[in-house]
Image (cartoon, rainbow, N blue to C red; front, side, top):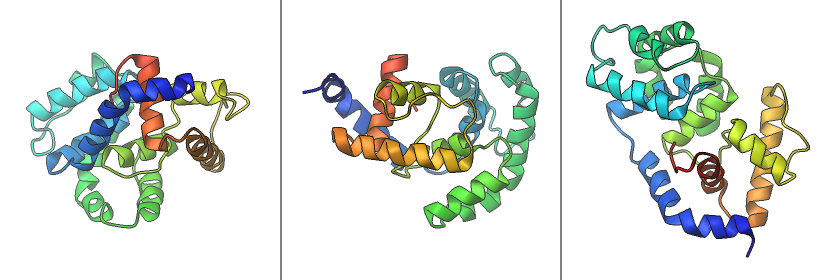
Length: 198
């Protein structure tokens, strides 16, 4: 058994439980997952989650609150991300309708209509709402894909076309090692951070 399979066996139960939690997200938590994925680029996922917990306590979705003071302490580019959160909140009713659509349509719509979302953030948001078979190509994942020779190097910029190419190669690698891509994503992330997170 490869070292990757050994690591997977150790964390398999925890990883599967986490993915099931994503499938069970409902109500206002859907909004906060979408917010979380706006905060994570170039910031710690753990710090982003701390901000989200504060926003939940303040009932940001339903009350007139400027999140800037909360983001300022923990999140890079907090000015831009404050604006993105406020715009996301304005569009949330439309988004909830779009969430019912086919995953491919949803993916394209989120990418083209939500400020603060690039390819990675869209995949992240969809995965955190229970969608499957998506690659969240952050630095942890790209580093591991290079390590396992799935990609020759970590690209400096990733166009939508390149993102989909790497995602397809990641899927082929996941099939080869017999670990579902969603689970392999969380495995790589946990190896880098020490925790099965989101």
